Length: 96
Image (cartoon, rainbow, N blue to C red; front, side, top):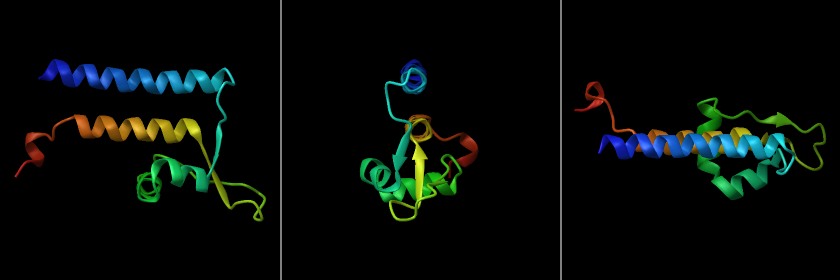
């Protein structure tokens, strides 16, 4: 059981690295509008990740087109962090 959990965590870590590498090579677009992020990940997750400070909303400087944008690498990392958090079983301290 533990081997499978470790394997899944390593897979998620590799996925984060792949997304960051693609971004560094200029293959993916780094900027994601607020509406695109909410459409892809859901409004609830975007609010949760901002509250946890996993992602940051950056001002666009153009209020006519949109108020904020997000960085794709932050969104992808937050998504994988959430996956990892769901994989790891709770510690005994947190069990009731």
